[in-house]
Image (cartoon, rainbow, N blue to C red; front, side, top):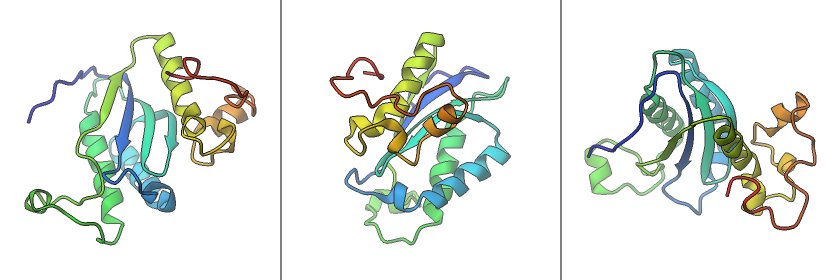
Length: 175
């Protein structure tokens, strides 16, 4: 199947990548395996991570690709593959996935969005950092350990209390 995707060399992209089992906590209990996968791919196929959050069953990330390069599908596929190969095979695998030599860990598809401008960039970065609060894992974004928000707090771009003001934040942090 051919998906309609935007391929802009050197662009910034936002992704949502989900586990097949949305009730799983596989990503956080195997965070080291995910970090190994990301690190290996970044060395072979460089990209810069502008923002990332790893939740139990999905992740959001925003990356910059190098100039002249638009092959984000290769990077996503390899991250998923390297992560999966580090885990014992305990999931149920459909016949269709077996034929394609796939594991039953990830959803096949993922959401991608090419960032259009500075406002769009800020909107998606806020969405990434606020996501653990949105899902009820923490009261404030800085309490979630698997987030690039800590890098932004350390650089004094965001305060430690960001995204934890209480009240209705819908529409403010990405939705």
